[in-house]
Image 1: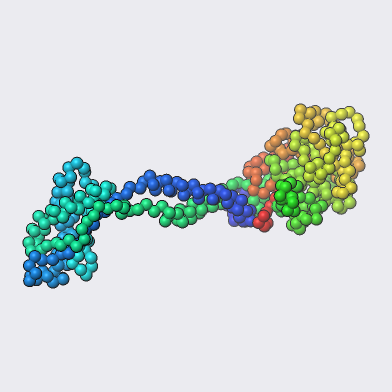
Image 2: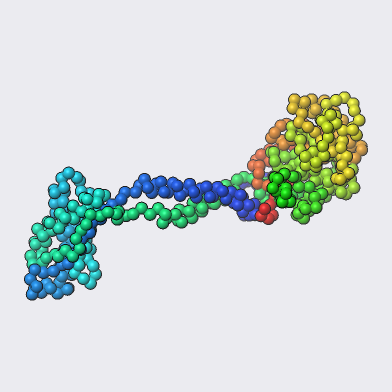
Length: 449
């Protein structure tokens, strides 16, 4: 087995896109949360400021003076910019407003190509901005006379008390950017989780990272094939006997049947155990379809549901037996004609030994020798016996049954169980079963939905 590494051919992009679509609600929820957090943070950190403004025209006291030229008055206006921003005027503002600490800003600018001067006072309180502006107007001459004794300022726009903040809060304006960043982050997070998740995502990854040969890959197949089934959410397991089944799913199961049959016929094996490491990996469906595919080749097949904890084959095949006439009942009693405990399906061409949940009787079933005798008896009566067992992580039943069968097939659902867990399951099977045929990569996506 190779060390864990990143390879592009080990990423199933169809599966990734499907995952993104299925988790679209996560992206939407993250975007909404980001908007709420941004809005709350912006409002908590928002401090409104108010600006009082006055506009002056710079001129000369003596109209016949050379100062009347535009060039000269523009130069004077530039000097007045420094006057209004001097520390002396700021100190005078503070002296005349002793009840408060003036922390506002004074800004001045000249309007290009004119002798107009704009002065603004900005503060967190509108009345402070207005009062500070009036103090400037009352005191600027005491400083400017040192620079231009013949200069004067004429107010052409009087300051007023500001009623609206100069920096209005506009959180909605940045909503598109926040949404875009949130979407990118959430999508990137989902992609990173998918890429870094140490699971088997592709057949190439299975061949490189699993400690057993890859038998075949079975494509993902939608459970509910009709609109009625979708509305009722029946979640009926896909069977190759269904005419609505996809070609890819059909070919995958038939190919698996050929691979398994070739191997067991070559080695003279008959009893095939199907198991998985975890639950919901599709082992029971694989077992059922393997039995149907072999029966389609005119093979005598018996399918046994030895998952005594959560039996599912009777639901998958829709073949129901009374509890006193199923496989569990047969294994718990002494004697009895086996034929009375196997349900024959003319529709599928197989015989099924279905089970019901056995609870505390499981230990007795696995240790009373009846199951081993049953398998030995069936070896002489049919071509193949397919045994469905519980997942290996759910109980040790599979390992106990593995000692009684001829070979085992491990079903691994694509992008589901950690590779480490799968390889641990493979190692445990190799210790107890006479033969391990290999791994089936199940539910592999080759298209969207």
